[in-house]
Length: 421
Image (cartoon, rainbow, N blue to C red; front, side, top):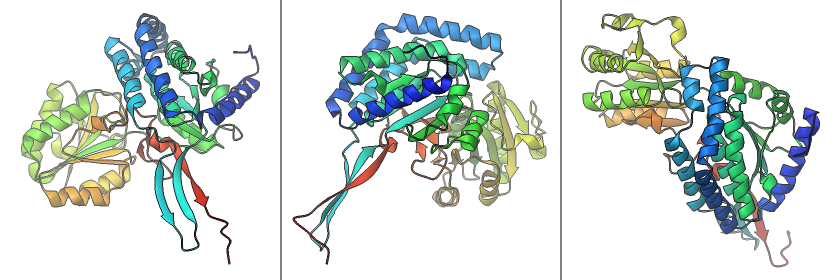
């Protein structure tokens, strides 16, 4: 890397090299991309000690910065999480290559034969906070889909991301692919983010991964198209036809498995008819698991709850806190979610097929679930190997963004001296 002092020139250089690499990647063989990802997985395994040492530096930085427990959890790596990164790289490597896939094919009466085929987007910019595993996930998915990627990790994960990035570059090198295909911005300077948002000549799409502040900044100031990943204001509605054992299991897992992920439940809605039975049991289970339950007036009689304030509805805690409210019926629950949700992931617990169908039809979140923990809102759990984020907008990609979602398409049209009358 050149020694740049000017952030604008640094980013222009990174962008130009990414654009050149993208042209090569667009025609790279499926086998070479698979080899690169397998070699990157091997490199992560070999560099475990170095990555964990780098992560220790980042954790010390995060503690000094006063990061919350949830943010520290997002930042932390251990042997199990490194094993997850390796497994993710191998899973993406093993997937079918999306580039060149024929999406549709037909003949016209004019004599034209037309195919619609998947093509890479070009250069993807990923701006993310804290979670160093995004470095591997984003790098792998962009490579698989034939895109060059510019990664700008958070200041907290600076050393961890660099250590993981080095493994991805080693994979590219081993497969004979351009090392500029996966670049990591080598500075904590926030001016690099501002530069990326206006690099319309070299970046085709920006994917922000982080809190409301980061995503809001990107959406407000980006001149480049954005795959928005908004807050995970995740709701679970316990219907009057819920199975009590399923309700308890699903809600506890959705809230407590990992509180700092975007699929963690943040608000529980309970049908009035079962508030004193199933609802009370679930709330006591949450309290017993160490969750602070902020309850509305109808549920404040349950020992251990605290009073919910107006600001608790529509809030992403990313912590061991949940807001709980009684609703009159399924339509009341749907209305609450429409008002306070973020179109990320919402769940109904019910044994009533009609209620499940109504919930699915009348809400338009990117992911809707029935009788399943919202912690499954993850590209890896959807069979994508990994995800670059969960898009909550409606243009191009929605839900977990895997390799296939990082492609566009073009039309290939063939004739035989065919002319238009």
